[in-house]
Image (cartoon, rainbow, N blue to C red):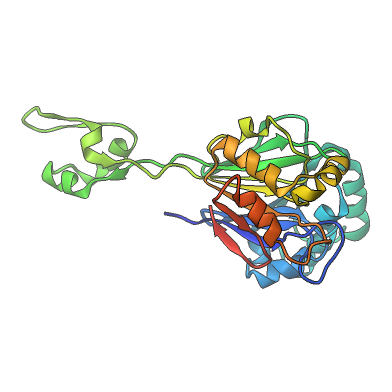
Length: 304
C-alpha cells in the first residue's frame, strides 16, 4: 500500500512555548506532499522532518490568525533562494487574496517559480482540489474569523489481479487492464469467467480530515463520516470549556464527541493552549469518550 501519512510540524497554539511550535502539518499521499497551515518557523520544522522543499506541491491555510500563516511568506522566500522552479499552489480564505498579492510583490517578487493563489469560500463544503490520486474538500468551521478545515480523500484503487487465475485461464497480459476495470474473460471453449473470480478487492480508500481552529460544532460529524483519521483541535481541557466557547475553540472531550459521532478510525489532538506544560489530562478525558486517540507532538508521523 502506498504511503498516506501526516507529518506533525507544529501542534501549539497562538502563544509560543519551548515545547510546541505553531500549527503546521505535511500530508503525504502517494508520493505527493501538501502542507496544512504554516505558522511562524514552519520552514525550519519542514527541514527537520526531511521533506524536500521542492516536493511541496500546495499549501492549505485554514484561517488568517498568525499562528497558522505567519510562516508562509518566509517559506516562499526561501523556496526562491533554493532554486525552486515548479509552481506552488496556495489555498486560503478568499479575503486574504489582495493582501497576499501585495506581500508577494513586496517580499517575494524575484523568484523563478509561479505562486498560484486559490481563494477558498470557507462557508461552503466543496471539492477545491483533485487529481488522479486524491481530492481535497473544504470543511466549514466556526472560529472568530473565516475558517475552514480540509479533508483529503484518496481515490479508490483498482482491484488486484489474481495471478493464479490469469495463469490458469491463460489470459494475455494485454487484457489485464480490461479485467482491472471490470471485464470478465471468455475461454476458447466458451466458458465465461466473471470479473470477481479474477481479482481481489483493493484496499478501502483512506481519508484524513484537519479541523482547526473551531468551536464545538454538533453537526460537524456529518461531513466527517467514517474518515480514517481526524485531527481536531483540542485547545482546552473540559475544566475550561467556558474559555473554549468564549474564544471559539474546542476541548479534548468535544473533539472526542465529534470523532465518536463520525465513526472515525482514530483521533489526533493538537493546538494545545500554552497554559498546559503537558497534555496527559487532555488525553485522559478524551479517551473516556473515544479510546483510539493520540496526542500529537512535533516530529511525529502518523499513518492515516
